[in-house]
Image 1 (cartoon, protein in one colour):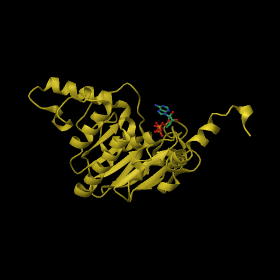
Image 2 (cartoon, rainbow, N blue to C red):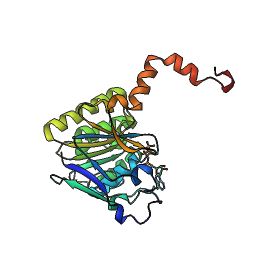
Image 3 (cartoon, rainbow, N blue to C red):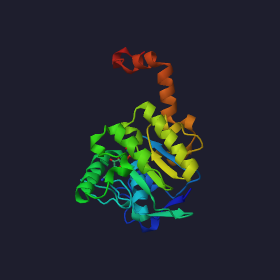
Image 4 (tube, helix red, strand yellow):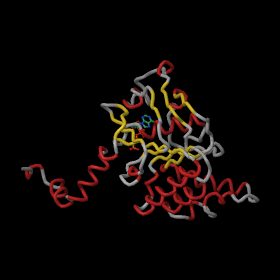
Length: 250
Ligand SMILES: Nc1ncnc2c1ncn2[C@@H]1O[C@H](COP(=O)(O)OP(=O)(O)OP(=O)(O)O)[C@@H](O)[C@H]1O
């Protein structure tokens, strides 16, 4: 494990009411202690998980649009400047790794194609399963990245890696994470909505909430676990209630 603590330098923040500090979980962030190799960020849409992950990525020196320190490409959507207001405490410092942003993965794949065109004598795709990520399905390209590019000791920041993965491939990702954690002591911070990924053992789950800020929760306490379990056990009853018109409610 490398990254031990994330602190917000509140004194340096120019305006706490402006984005990204207008997000309650970010505004209330003082220190987040990381105690295990695998850390999950969970919470409702818009609660600030991606914003914090991007901030950590940029402070490490990773491209905020995704990739590692060696990948420099621009994307059209804006990313926050949170990184400069974060202090990361390391033991030891680690700059190897990768930042996966599901939403800009297409741009990352295009960036690799461009690199290959500019450097025909180098096999750029070697670390990505041997062929362009554009020539693989969304899920195949994600898994190719995980299997081939995530091979060394490093810190891996993943933003909704389940986005393109079938349930079986989410299990495959759990196995990859497990092997990397065991063999290389790699560290992962993962923002996710997947009850499968969240089931990874010996991990810390931080729940982002507009009322309570960032708090640690157990797997069984997450809405992902509870709602999925209830749905699978009571599908018909739940759908019946969900589809009731307002005047049909008992
Ligand atoms: N560039 C921006 N300018 C202003 N507000 C933004 C910007 N980007 C995101 N936000 C707002 O910040 C909040 C947190 O967004 P963020 O993407 O971090 O949420 P999230 O928890 O990752 O959500 P999701 O689960 O949907 O991915 C949202 O309310 C969003 O609308």
